[in-house]
Amino acid sequence: MAGSTAISCLHYRDAPAAIAWLCHTFGFVEHLVVPEKDGSISHAQLSLGDGMIMLGSVRDTDYGRLMRQPDETGGLGTQSIYLVVADVDGVHARAVAAGATIVLPLKDEDYGGRGFTCRDPEGHLWSIGSYDPWA
Image (cartoon, rainbow, N blue to C red; front, top):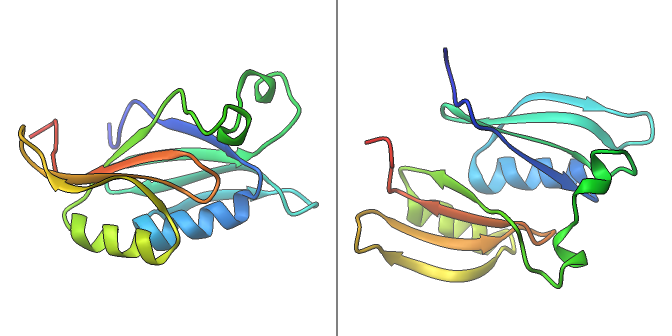
């Protein structure tokens, strides 16, 4: 079996812009993108190394009603995503240049690795670091 068995799923108000931002800023690659006629995204899969996230546009569906966007919770999240990357400083520089809000600064961690935490343009929380829990 290739890849991860746990895949995070996100909703975005502007999913096409989120896909472009995530690919440019964090280095994701489009694996599958299913657009709707209205320009929204029915389903997308973005890969990064052996990992993947799935995302789509915010929709009024049974599943969609189970989720809230960060702007609906006062900016507080109920989950975050951790990305293992080799060049933390490079990703940090791209995130700052792309307008990410850095909420925890770039630093070396006591348990090993280096990392930072930021919010993407729609407020989702991302932690990026070189610590690999599989290593």
